[in-house]
Image 1 (cartoon, helix red, strand yellow):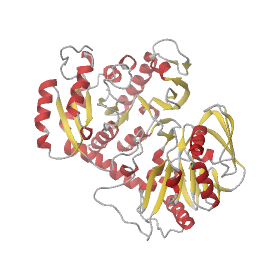
Image 2 (tube, helix red, strand yellow):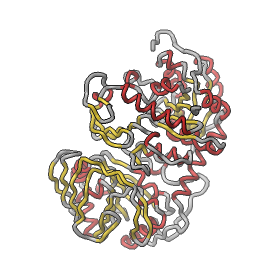
Image 3 (cartoon, one colour):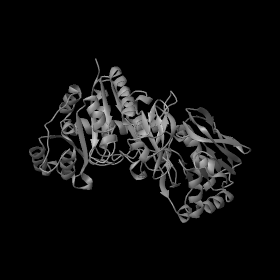
Image 4 (spheres, helix red, strand yellow):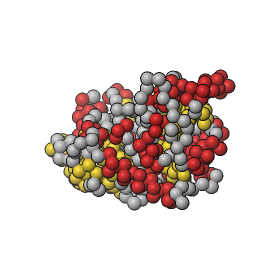
Length: 516
């Protein structure tokens, strides 16, 4: 018998779909329910590599951790990784199958064929793929909690939709719409979202979930009653605003809301000084979550920067991953950041390059794949030459550095030839400049502490890493907090009835003058 399910949609992007989905997964698994997350189609540069060697959205990997299951390609069968404003790399079932324009992907006629029979503009092929993946998950789990994308009321894209009402209708799943009340206009957003849907889609909308509420809920309740009178749909909970829950999101640069910041306990620095980390906010930044582990350390302050003068007081500068290495290199030069990095290296001040950031620190980049720029001179801070291969490296390496065990994951087309320096993971180190392709390496607690001790020594800071900070443990605390929010502030009995039903719910709602 196939498991039940639910689609968590949103009135907007960043309404809280990812964290609500994770919270429902954590609540269910604590009740003994075998549950899995699912997002049919994700557009994000923040991705992860599963143990099977598949690339999926990092948000789905986080949701799998919330569900206490191993992430797989089934949980995010289509991943779009933007390379410009108009095109993206298409990752299908964990493997890249080509670049496609937005018009080609969302269009309905013609187009280039990309592996597995998927063709640009052919929604049916992709819908068949994602529904098959969802069916496999439903055979394996008691429940599958799906996350939508953007808004289900993007009426210009409904014809090609496979991630919101398209997948809900194909799977016969009820839908709960999440709205961010902190931004205002949540009642209009709920009403308008429902009104714009076609009648067949409206029948699947069970109700709403208010997110990020501040204040006295009793003041909100009359509005919720009026909303139910207007739409015939109830609200399944009002979740309070909670700091520090922006974990492993699709995109965003809110370090102050990231890492393992807890409202109840903020640990003071162990040493006399703090460490200041500046992260260059390069174009097409990927896997910005690499710095979350640094932000989780007591006494480490992390911020994103885009001006050379913002590096002046930094004890460590991180050049993160990017989907556009050559473009990021040009950006660094245009803004004077390249010169600032060179001066830091000459002065023995720490710089860490990760993935694309590692590549651009090298001497030479030969790229006929990503930017098609040919041979480009790098910053020359590391003895490395990079050649872009058409095959993407997707791996889960393990190793050691600074006397500590390290785990990470690799997602890159660039192949680095290391010509000198001191070995550092798969890359190298020259003085205070370090480079590696390994994402996630700083989540290895012993290695992170050893690395920060090196940074503190090079910076002359009396900083001491906390001896007992567990990034994994802090992430688990955050996931439990998400589960607590659902358990304490949502109608869990009502949600469970929806998940079990797996059938259309609600009544059609078509205001005068609105046609689906």
